[in-house]
Amino acid sequence: MKRVSALVIILLHFGACFAANSIIAIVNEDVITLQSIEAELNKVNSFDEKIIIIEQQIDIKLQLSMAIELNLNPSQEDINLTLSQVANNNNLTIEQLQSYPQFPSLVQEITNKLSILNLQQFITKDLNIHLSDDEVKKDCIDNQSEKDSKQIKIAQIIVSQVENSDTNSGDQELPVRNFLKKLSDHITKGASFDKFAKLHSQHPSYANGGLSEWMFVNNSTIEMLDELKEGEVSEIYFTDMGWAIAIKVDERYVDPDLENCKEKIAFLKSQDFYIDWLEDLRDTAYIEIYTDKL
Image (cartoon, rainbow, N blue to C red; front, side, top):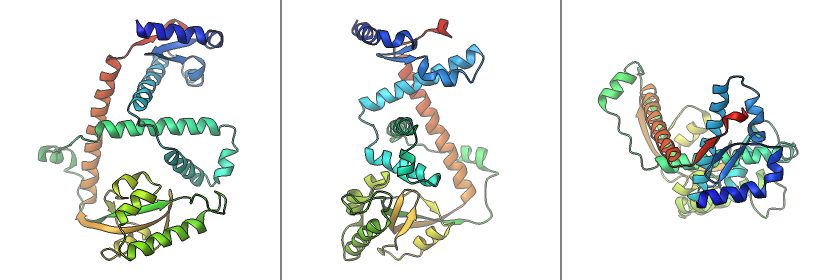
């Protein structure tokens, strides 16, 4: 009864608006309008293809709703970092990106994708995937290199902009470098890199003290980091997410092709687990599709 009442309130409140923007589906207390997915529907012809698009939108609605319920919405900092990366990848400044008429839609799309990514990570964070020897032999027997390759793990402090600096957001290199230099000096004198990363890094890895995944030593930046002595802070270097300093945490030698194969299997298992979870979420949701409007 509560759900029905909520839907009635929604429909009465937005009745005039939806008169020209038909509801194509209901997902719990939320709705999907024909106008919101019209562009996608116009790209396909068959009824089945249109249903697939609506089903995908239903999944998105359910995931976003759960992300809100679990307080997994991305921070403004994460959104800004992603926007900076989009601008860099397209050789634009943030100001140029913001000048595009589609910028509000881009921000919403990024927010939604980051929310769903946070949800996926939350649902699978405690998943302990163990690969048996038989699985590795079956799927990775042909994925072995003749020589092992070196990997390192680092901790980074990445900063893209300094608040309250005298320069604008498009010219942050100097204040960021000065800020990182101060942090580096304090760490060299004994300050905790882990604590500084948690306090100052503007990269999502800040929560783990800036700790990275294992990385192959296969480019000049990582080669520079590989040369660091224990506890030594790197020179300032540039990343897609901003300027950074780092320390080397660990190293190992692995078969790169074999490791990539294992990671792929683990990723697919993680995806399967999440898909099953999403299907269970759908089973408990109130979903109605108005197929007659297609």
